[in-house]
Structure formats: C-alpha cells, structure tokens
Image (cartoon, rainbow, N blue to C red; front, top):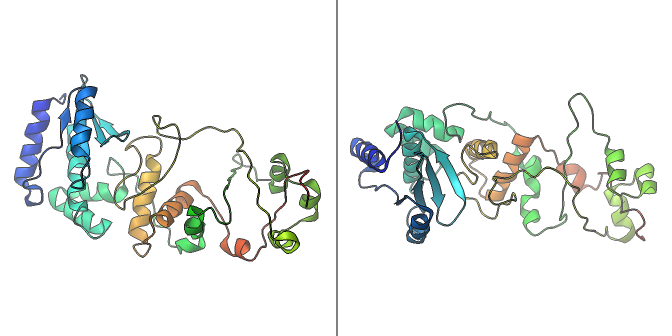
Length: 290
C-alpha cells in the first residue's frame, strides 16, 4: 500500500493509542515539498526531541531528515517509518542502548531486536568482539582528536589470497629506501631528532560516503543514534556502532566507540604496544634531510 499523508497519520495514531510508552507523542512534522521541508527543519531545530522531520514525495517514499542535515533514511514501507519515528522516543530518557531496546520490545518484540542490530530489518547483527577495545584501534581515539602523535593514518588491504608487502607499500608512498632497507623503527628516528612528523597528501582512492555530503566525516556521535543514512552504503557502520555500544558500556568517549566499530567492521589493526614502545617500522620521506 502506497504511503499517503492520511495513511501515515492514521497508522501513527493507532500505534500511539496501543502503547503507553508512545502516548502523547505526535507525528513529526511532515512536508510534501522541499520548500515545506525547509520550514519544518526550522521548527525542529530545538533542544527538545531529536529534530526529526519527514518528507513525503509523490512516489510514496518517506524521507527522514534531522533539522538541516542530509537525509537519514528513505523508505516506502509504512512499518519501517513507524519504527524509525518510535525509535527516538525511549532513547531520550533511557540510560543505555539495552534499556532503549527493552522499551521498544514493549511496543513490538521485533523492534527491540531491530534496535540491537542497528539496521532497518531484524537480521545482520554484528557478533560480539569479546576483546578489550582499548587494546585495538580505539586506543588512539583521544589523542587523535588533538592530532597527536599522528595526523594521518592510511590502512591497506591485500587482494584475496595475497599478503600485504609493507616494505613495497612504504616505498610506493615515498619512504626513504635506505631506512626501509635498514629496518628503521620509530624509536630509532625519535632517538635521532625527536621523531619529526611530516604531512603528505593522500593517494587517490574510491571515496566511501553517503552520496550527499561527499566526504566521510564524524564530528559528533550520540550514543544510540545512527550517524549515517539508514540502509545506505555506510549502514554497516551503524550496525557495528550499535554492537560496540552493547559490548562496551564502560566506554564513555564516543570516539573510542566509533574507532572500535571501525576496527571490527573493516578489520583494521593498530598495535598499541608496538607504537607505544617504538617498535613499529618507520621512515622519513625520501629526499628529506635528517
């Protein structure tokens, strides 16, 4: 059944009437054009609520926006729209993602599982990591915000069935051949002159983003709220973040959670002990004085 303004309003009214948790919760502002959406965005930019406003287009697709932010979801399934609206209600008062999931289960048992998975359906939950996140990639999160000690990290993945040739990659990126051949370590460079750092432009590669923004950037993250477009190319990160929230409630820094989710979903590795003790291989750019 195609979603219309009337069917959406009636479905939300039935949902709120059937569940005490949703009593008194109104349907978010609904726009039927881009101009109306702009006015809705102005109304929703307030401390109350999560700023969600909806755009219903001529095809029956409902597109969600938070204030003036890019689109956060798009769906033609009425049940998904109802879930995405309801998802924010318990999150405003719940103390943890598990409490939010339990509250959603009271509305619909499937909704609790969906929230735990971080996706738009009831499948695809990320497995628990079972490790200390601060022994993985997340250990660098706090210093990374201040760009200390590294301003740029590039990760490489080998083709299936092949291994990464770290020395060849270093040379292709412009590392000093003599230092690469000598097996120079980070602590060797630091012993010479304090370990100067140099910036370098990134190599060209396929950009991964959500289409509108043109860049993958995280400048904030609220626990329990998916930072990327639901069902979009980065939805796997939404799922990984939800798993990280459930596995590690002891992490209060949102960037530690985010970096841990990156590690688990992309298979990144950044050995904390080797970096801390200066054992990682290192080299200056070729041709630069030492």
